[in-house]
Image (tube, helix red, strand yellow):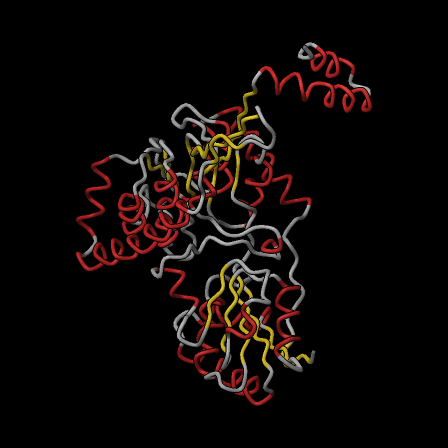
Length: 420
């Protein structure tokens, strides 16, 4: 593997100072509740908002502030996301009355969590698409209380109007104007105005990610997400300008985002490098995208597609694009990715907004062990069993011997009581 453009080493932002700051925020919210949230709103968001739940009147005002085309676009995107979430949920089926041996009856039910918080970030941009991606599958899963939380626009008391409309269209039951690590703490432990939830999902800055990590256990989470990333595998048939556009689409998310190209063609790699620089000249978000590309952009030259696939599986990227002449020849060998985009027609940005798959995906190599948010994120598979007299008496000696072998004599006695 040859390096055409190298990147800086990116840390996972797990440093002692960050951990301590977030722990202090969580403890403050636990001890002082809403008063702590008000202090943080003033300090971080320059907001004097004191009632955190968004009223129906505010939501209606948001609808009045956006145009009909935007509302129609949201509903069309939601329809695709919802349809795929319904299909995914249907793939999970209950198991009713399975018998591994005569008289032993095993089952499992698929049960949604009772409540969740969908955290929709709002730092550099109004990420209303995340509202659709988080709330829609929770609704499909059957969560009975879906809360949504997002920062206010800095210096105001209101969430971005487009984000607010998206939260409502997606189906949030309760919407709150709270942000950052303090929002995660509030929904994990509860405050006077906010009842705690069972699960928190959604992306955010490093403080949000660290707060989710520290609150995990008290609440369930999707995963601890870092900066966005895309890896593109391309051969000589790819269009350099398309590859450049896809790389910069990720880079403009954040100065810490990462765009990677692995190509089997030196000529293509060189052309992509030129195309990126050309696009950056006129890109309105070049201040962010350019820094991200300069610091963390990477172009690698592989000997063949097999080497490119091995490298991709090792990196385990959030987004993986396969822009080669015969993608089906290698698709089956790709194992570690948050979401896969197959062929030149399939832009990663389509998945960001409207094609139907979820864009809330694992980063920093986490796709080695988990996928992205989906309807199943909000579902529990819970087992049950019952036995006949004969089956109970039959299995009891086996269990008694196994328990005695571990030295757990009360376990052995409980089994013995069933021997007839």
